[in-house]
Length: 91
Image 1 (tube, rainbow, N blue to C red):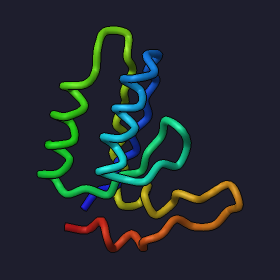
Image 2: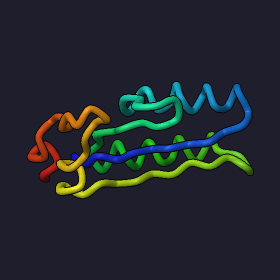
Image 3: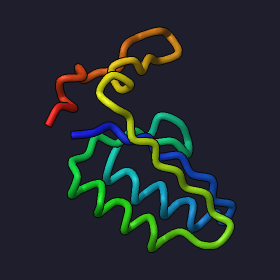
């Protein structure tokens, strides 16, 4: 398993909503256009294919894979550590 942060900026409201719905199937929203996704390699590849099929010129979508140490260092604004424990990301 790996933690991947997905951030997107899509001006077209209908396509933005489609991206949001698509990503709900892969992870949890942490802001309106930012998701945290805990994925295995096959699911990550499937998510990337689906994102690629939806994106159009002018859209911005970025995927930030986090290493085990980086995933363990993520904290919320109230300084609470992110769960689950980093051991979940070891393969």
